[in-house]
Image (cartoon, rainbow, N blue to C red):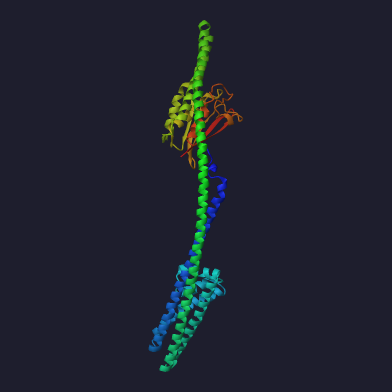
Length: 468
């Protein structure tokens, strides 16, 4: 099986890193720019409230000057409080920087609650940038004129409350109000224009940086995919070679099966020899002994044929996934092995936390048959009862099937070899050396894995993980 590293070669890592870094910087830059532009919008929006409130305050002050209506004075105070609140927030930002007091002032300036943090952020971190500093200076100049307008309003209110306002004095007040309003209009326009200029600079820089990073990303992706395609071409060549190797292996396997089939004549020859001996044997006990030998030869040869058939079916048949009833399949397996009990009882232990799973029935049947057959064949004759157990339980991404026995066990030095083809343990001579090899091959076909633990004299446990 070819590793993904052969496709995603190490030399492509620098290009991939550049791609990731450039993309991350592009995202960060755009996020930063959006935040700055959002803050500029908040300042421009705040300026509109500032400007409108100042103009309304001037209008109500003029109305109060003519009508002496206390309600008009109340409206003047209400509107003049808006730019005064912004001014209080600015003063607090430039002094102690108490966020609570700053926000109180900005709220009084009718700034939206969601914009307060952005307003403070720009002021704290960007006030040294020329255009931001220029806007702050305009803000400070405007606050001085607002103070001047407020003081003029207080003077007019005091005059109205304590004396008569003559036409000449009224005209003088009107000129002062108009003068302040005109200067404030220019000041407010300069403030907005300054932030407009800054936003255009940010936009221009953002476009340039976007073009640069997009260019870097396009170049990196192009180079990366060029190398990736080269690697894919190389991998395809390797796959072609492996396919040729597999064809050769299949031919060798067919040859092996063919040779093994011919080797089946060997036990036939043995049986013929035993039969010829029995023809001349008169002792009944010896005849029974020869019959036992013949049965052993036939049993072993029968198992060998079954293993070869299972191996061939496992190799050639496609995987067919279906929902399988584990208890039903295990009961079928038990029935197939009742004939080898040899008058000894078997205790079947079952624990189904999972009763059904999705897998290939043929492969699962091969696994069950071979492991149960081994549990019986390698049972401990010194024990009165053969114990064969099975359990199924869920894991994070698979079903774990455990099959255990109380047999003779497997030596620790033999455990790494038991899944090799034709490996036979020295416990007895009943195995063909194919059973566990076929089991592992079937589990590989199911994309699962198998683990084994064993202790001499106590038994063996197989852990089979079938992914779901």
